[in-house]
Image 1: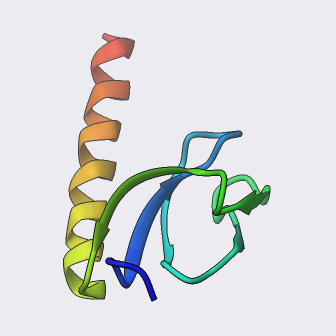
Image 2: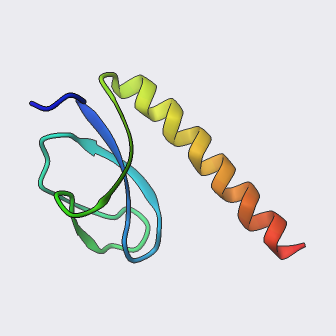
Length: 73
C-alpha cells in the first residue's frame, strides 16, 4: 500500500470530488456515472484515516458549493 490509505479524487468529466482507497484502480463517479481510471485521475488530497479524508472532502465540497453560489450572484 502507498503512503495514504484513502485518496480524494476529482472526476475528469464533471469535476465531482469523491474518495477511494489508495489501492483501487478505478471507480465510478457518484455524480455523473463516468468510470474513472484512478491511476490517471487528479488526486486532490490524501489521508491515512478514512474519517480524516471524509472531513477534508466535506470541507472541499462546501467550498466548491460556496464558489458556485457566488458565481451566480
